Image 1 (spheres, protein in one colour):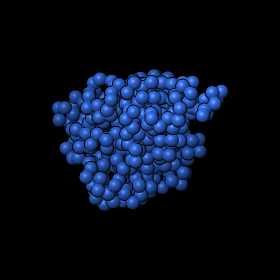
Image 2 (cartoon, helix red, strand yellow):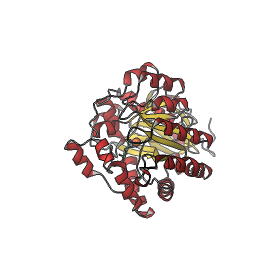
Image 3 (cartoon, helix red, strand yellow):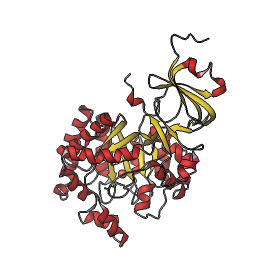
Image 4 (cartoon, protein in one colour):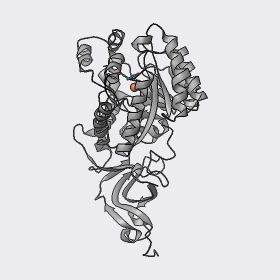
Length: 410
Ligand code: DI6
Ligand code: FE
């Protein structure tokens, strides 16, 4: 018997269809979920509630049969940037390749120029609009990379904007330092000096000032080679930062295996990853982050090795890769659709790719990614009865509301 003076839960959500993304209890058809201090305190069938909802909490919310999922996690984005690259989109439609445009000082370098020229205030404003769009597609946690500054003042400007976005919108932002995105024009003929700058000056400050959670490298013919990548990984590890890698997007470099050897949280893209890379990833629990938006915009033909990832039980996450060059996409539900239609993931695999496995790709799986007792109460409520409908429609917005534990001061 519950004593009326003290209610058991802060809030209780009733009459919902819960997709927990837990392997053991994936769906609760007519369920309830209770939240206390920003954590999930109880989840189960309505019939198993200890008492009537009103006796359990002052705040009873009737979901009226709506579908509830964990809050979506976009675990790979480049959301903070200046300008846009619509012109390159046009050039590619006329037959120019991404590499050709990059080598002609377009590509990442052109966004670096545009980002450097913006004030911190303007950069914040432009990025805030994009963040709000992604949040409207159910995103409650997001990873954002630096990498369009490529000198210390501008990389720092990006990381400060990320922090301000986090505070302004009460959303968890995992910050990744990506000074190793490409060689800025002033170091084009002196690449080693730029790697020195990253390893000897930038990473130590990033780590000591807790400006980022991880370090990422774009390992590719047009960016950092495998030796340079390894040196940056070693430095990141030495300073206690997690590792991520843009691996084998355009060619087979062995970078996914290298990232796994350094216990990277994730290796991302992977269109050209080999069997060897996948075996190494499986051994080190490195998550495969697949990015169908970039595959789509580049009109890539080579699919990532989905079947091998399944066979070796490498967790598959999917993300927007939201960026001005190869994936100007601001809807994670569209990305869910693309993961199914372009990559052949099942809808449930895709959903796990933006929840439980995306949490693993950020190393936050103890607190995020599933609707389970003890985890943060980050969830999305949708105006649909079945989670497959989130993936099936394009162009409507079925989001009803989200709840983010970041809102709650503990
Ligand atoms: N791979 C990508 O998909 C983005 N970065 C990367 O290394 C593209 C970034 C850009 O073209 O601006
Ligand atoms: Fe990327």
